[in-house]
Length: 102
Image 1 (spheres, rainbow, N blue to C red):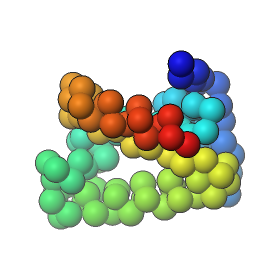
Image 2 (cartoon, rainbow, N blue to C red; image 1 turned 45 degrees about the vertical axis):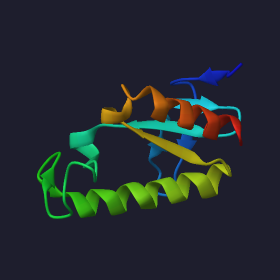
Image 3 (cartoon, rainbow, N blue to C red; image 1 turned 180 degrees about the vertical axis):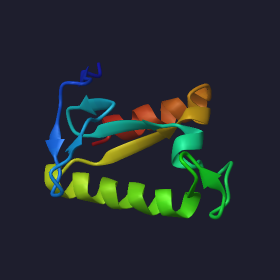
Image 4 (cartoon, one colour; image 1 turned 90 degrees about the horizontal axis):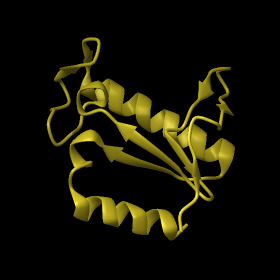
């Protein structure tokens, strides 16, 4: 059985801001990324404007930097699920297998 906490874990980042994981499992965090707000690369090219008019490639770099920092601070991996994959049961099964392998 998977046990998780949601909205209870705060991770203080080096810039003084906090990371609020969507889900925290025993050995990892799970983030649900909105396709538009995070620029799902299956749907947007690097120069596409997403969110507040930011090029997707800039958001991708910000997200990658943020995830790397969180993983370094917590020593826990961050697993990302895209909004458009939430209805894909096969993908969700893969994510669950990934989570339980940590």
